[in-house]
Length: 189
Image 1 (cartoon, rainbow, N blue to C red):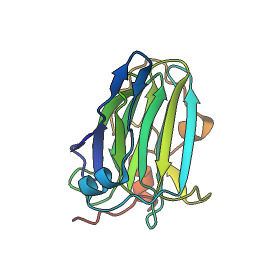
Image 2: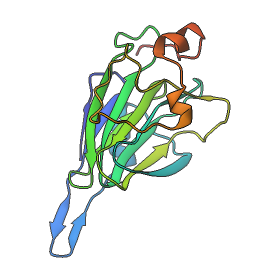
Image 3: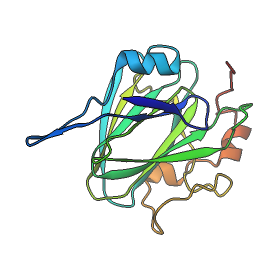
């Protein structure tokens, strides 16, 4: 397993070492110790989620109040997704920047994102299933979203017809969320 930082501080791509034989494939897609060495602290796990999406569904950009925030370790169990990490931390050198990684059931990559970062994805196939390991549980009233089609962010979604939930479609822009004081603050290393 190889873990490499993305350009946004606190985000990492995880590249597993799959083992193939006549029976199929075995992948170690999460290792507590290897991830802790790479990110500098252990990832406490409090909740695991699965979501299945049709092609062109865009979910996010979601984030939680900090503290405690919600770190995530995500992978695509079936199908393919374009996973997007957005730096929503006011004062961060990469505030407003985003980075994408294809997650699929072929390469079996994963992405870790720290508390304070926004998360979104677009399903590249029907039945794309995202698996999430989360550092804290869902807390109604403490979870927020940024509109994934915000022109200021300029995320290049791989579809001309993104399908959004009603909640994501009316989520504020990055500028509106910042003006409302909803965004987390950057605390550098």
